[in-house]
Amino acid sequence: MKLLNKSLTYWLRVIHRDLGYLMAGVCIVYATSGFLLNHMDGKDRAYKTVEATLSMDKGLDAEAVQAAWNAKPELPVLKKVLPVGDGQAYRLMLQGGIGVYNPAEGVVEYETHEKRPIIYWFNSLHYNRVQGWHWMGDFFAFSLAFFAISGLFLVKGKNGLGGRGKWLFLLGILIPLAYVLFA
Image (cartoon, rainbow, N blue to C red; front, top):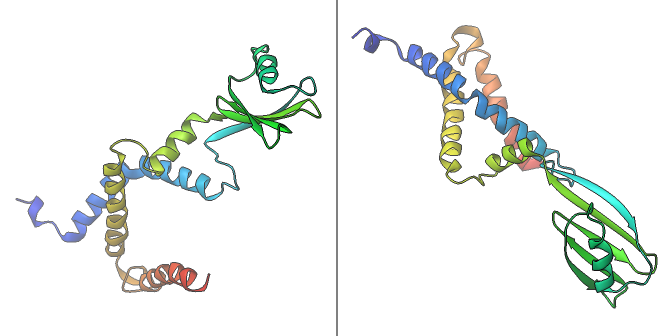
C-alpha cells in the first residue's frame, strides 16, 4: 500500500518520465517530418526529382516519339504520349515522372521522381496516411497535452509555476495568439 500513499507530484514525475521515454522516438519522427514539411519551398522532400534533357529527331509525331523513346531501355517507362495544343508539343506521361517533347527543336525535357524511403515514411505518418496510425497520432497528441500540463507542476519554488514559470507559460499562450491576430 506504500505506492498508493505517494504524492500527486511523484506520480506526475513517474508518468511524465516514462511516457517521455516512450514518446521520444515518435517525437523525433514528427519533429523531423514537421521541419521538412514546413520548409518544402515548392518541393516535396519525400521525393528526389531528377531533371534531364534528351535529343530526338525533329518533327516526330506521337507514335514516332513513343518508338524513339522505347528504343532506349535506360529511360523511364513511357506510359502515354499526349498532344498539347495543335501538335506543337507532346506531353510524355512517364512512370514516376513527366516530360515534354518539342517537335520544332527535337528536344525532350523530362523529370522523374523517386521516393526517399525514410522521409516518405515519416511524412506518411505525419499526414496520417498509414492505416490505423490515427490511434497512435491521437495517443501522441494526448501525451503532448499531458507533458505540457504535468510539466507545469513538476518544478516548485521560484522557477516553478508560482514564480517565473507563470510568465513563461503566459508568453507561450500569447505567442500563437498574437500570430493569429496580427499575421
